[in-house]
Amino acid sequence: MISVVIIGAGNVATHLFKAFSKANSITVNQWFNRNLNSINSYKNEVEIIDNLSLLKDADIYIIAVSDDAIAELSEQLPFENRLVVHTSGSVSIYDIDKKQKRGVFYPLQTFSKDAEMDFANVPVCIETIGGGEHYNLLKNLALSIGSPTKKVNSDQRRVLHLAAVFVNNFTNQLYRIGHEITESEGAEFDLLKPLILETAKKVQELSPYMAQTGPAKRHDKKTIKKQLKQLENKQHKDIYELLTSSIQQTHGRKKL
Amino acid sequence: MISVVIIGAGNVATHLFKAFSKANSITVNQWFNRNLNSINSYKNEVEIIDNLSLLKDADIYIIAVSDDAIAELSEQLPFENRLVVHTSGSVSIYDIDKKQKRGVFYPLQTFSKDAEMDFANVPVCIETIGGGEHYNLLKNLALSIGSPTKKVNSDQRRVLHLAAVFVNNFTNQLYRIGHEITESEGAEFDLLKPLILETAKKVQELSPYMAQTGPAKRHDKKTIKKQLKQLENKQHKDIYELLTSSIQQTHGRKKL
Ligand SMILES: NC(=O)c1ccc[n+]([C@@H]2O[C@H](COP(=O)([O-])OP(=O)(O)OC[C@H]3O[C@@H](n4cnc5c(N)ncnc54)[C@H](OP(=O)(O)O)[C@@H]3O)[C@@H](O)[C@H]2O)c1
Ligand SMILES: NC(=O)c1ccc[n+]([C@@H]2O[C@H](COP(=O)([O-])OP(=O)(O)OC[C@H]3O[C@@H](n4cnc5c(N)ncnc54)[C@H](OP(=O)(O)O)[C@@H]3O)[C@@H](O)[C@H]2O)c1
Image 1 (cartoon, chains in turn red, yellow):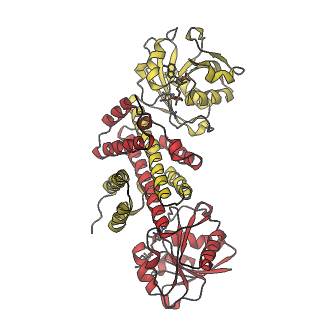
Image 2: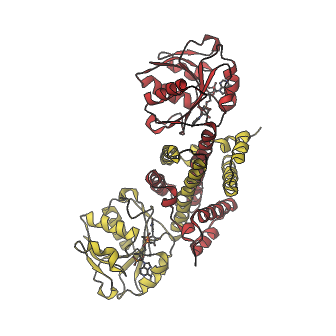
């Protein structure tokens, strides 16, 4: 049995609480938030607290609060030498107060409050300092909620977080631009949804390199020119040009 | 029963042939390609030809060849006043020779030779000139293979094709950059695959506007600066800056 305390009540903390509660080999001893309102509805399932001095023993303390608050919160913990982890992709493991055993339990996924999350689709990147014991404990925690795990170092975690910005935030902005462009002519964004899904599915099997198609890769100058002319928004034009050039960089110039 | 002739033997033609063959209310009378080798393996299922003068009667002739070859091929058809459509997102309906009844049957999806395609996930955009009769025939053809349909005009079709470049080709290039960045530190691109899928799934229900998260939207200057520093490739930096600025354009400046 692995005992945990959850600190914070945002997207990640809430999804973790639900997953831990369902797992047979995990007990959530306490759930802390600075503001009890957010977790009040769980009070029959778990002890909820808003005072760090009430914290009890546990195998793992998980700090799932905003990146900026992690260091300060970890300093305030009223004990030492226990395993304390944060869940951030970008915050240093050394931001956790050095009187604790430090670790990172970074779920590489995008969480929103309402959407259900199957943790089989949440690879957990684990970073610890030294000893394999903490690594194994965190790995078992992840496995108990069905998550695949990966041991990473700080550079690898940072780079995964950066790549996540490209494939999640930036990709989502391309969807947004698709939305703007279609609506400008009274066409329906909905028609693009199956294509969006298929594009994401394709790279589950094929490398993005192999999956690429379209006018940029074909160096189809006529279509590229026509499409640039079609775009009215200057920034959309810039994005079109830059990503076209990036694709051509990746796939090489076609000899004419 | 709707009778069709397929012209061309690429990705689209092949997927259409398979879907039409399975549909009860469609017969494929003939399959033309300039080069019989590509369709030789289907000769027991359908009459294959490489000579346009052998073309027989059919309700619909579908020209699914490279964009540049559509006009020329349609000119060579040895008949007139029949319903001839192409399958391109960007080619004008008027590229089809004017002695025919012209139409467009544009499947808004990305096809590859090997991957199976369920036509329920292929919205077909239909464009015709004048008469509702041809529109209805093309609509029934699409419905017979399980595809949703949408009546579009030329501007809407062009804009859908342009948006498709953003959500398919450009998105795929962001996946590619994610691949490059992770591998540069010996991290695994595979870890990003569930996130890629979830990002695409999110906008099936939520608008891309609502689905946005991350440092750009939060105007998290510290993280943005750190991540820009992390990027070694000049073009990746430019893409990071441009898409960050695009997100901030969409979501407005945060008051400090
Ligand atoms: N969201 C994701 O998709 C995702 C994915 C992977 C990793 N992460 C990481 O997981 C962590 C939490 O992210 P999240 O999305 O769950 O955040 P969130 O939904 O914004 O929630 C933030 C939580 O932090 C608490 N908090 C903020 N400032 C605090 C302070 N000074 N002292 C105490 N508590 C404070 C908030 O308390 P109140 O309820 O009182 O406001 C809230 O419970 C972050 O490190 C993030 O980088 C997030
Ligand atoms: N691929 C997609 O995801 C997709 C999606 C929507 C719409 N479309 C549109 O569908 C059409 C076909 O695309 P595709 O991807 O199927 O193409 P493709 O796989 O590249 O195949 C092109 C076909 O056109 C034939 N062809 C090329 N030049 C020709 C010429 N001068 N005379 C006669 N035949 C010629 C080729 O014949 P050979 O076999 O002899 O080379 C081949 O059968 C295009 O208009 C495209 O814009 C494609």
